[in-house]
Length: 277
Image 1 (cartoon, helix red, strand yellow):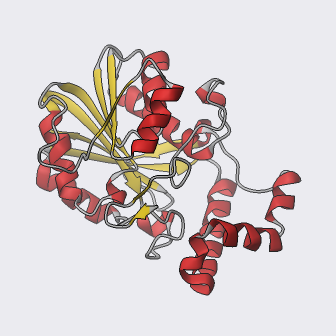
Image 2 (cartoon, helix red, strand yellow):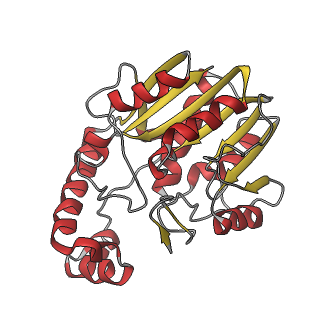
């Protein structure tokens, strides 16, 4: 069940990026949230290579960052940590060669090797915790002096059209604006560089925004019933969404449909930050 204080759901497929075809090449996986993350990790590697690097993945979820970083990008070592026991169990099952640990990454007592990691990844996690500064403390103390942290989060004015609580993901505790995100990071790190992740195709961006606007209307109408799976299935059926998808409609994209902009543009759906101690 949902733990509202921690901002996570023990069900593996609830609010997490999960490969729909883990036996296939991740670059071709049909899950859009997986494709969003592949775009990020490829961008990280382009800006700060993780080849032959020791990588710590905080909030690793279903573990596919491990497979991508090791098999595609040549990382030396990748360890994933998540608070969810079901997510870690899934990651160990699908990627048996991986190193995955269950732990509270916001705890002051969390220690996965302080000061030894070349790269610390924390993608789409900080919006799920009620102590974001504690999470940033964890990133800071685990990075080696010359290491690079990579932190991403939804850009609230675009991702959720500024609506709170998020109409997109019910496990988001707090989404941030660019200024809020930058302020938090600059309190902890000596260098902060923020990029915006955006669609290269304006049609995809407009479709994403229209879906969020529709979700907001649904949430206002249904309240917390909006997050009940059975209610959502019925509601979507009444709106003929399954038929639309069957006929090829709906939002579909891959990692190649994204670009990264600095300075952050007004159509940036996510914020991606490089940080150093």
